Length: 137
Image: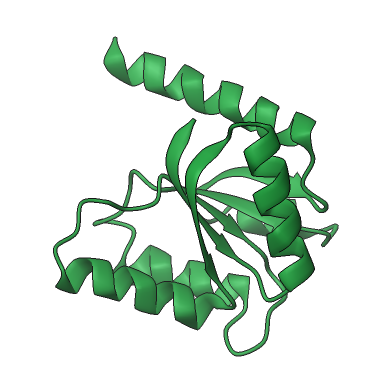
């Protein structure tokens, strides 16, 4: 189980579904939500200002959002925040078919097609465990 998950998505139903499925899968202790990329960047800026070490281990990032979409968030996060938060893994959460190929230029950990399922979270949990075990060894 990860301690903190940040979900960046403008769809309230998707956010509610993520919370329900994450709880069923014992996936995350805490889930934080942002409605767009600008809110997510503001969240990370606040973490820097408060010198917080309690940061999300994982981001679920939608690509199609108003104000600041996922692509713009990725661009800004990669340029200005990734060095400080390189331990945070980013998972694209989208129904966009071509997203996987385009996302390859960013530090993307995984890609999950919407809607989030119990099986997808279990698979992701296993992938994260492998990384943790590798880092411990």
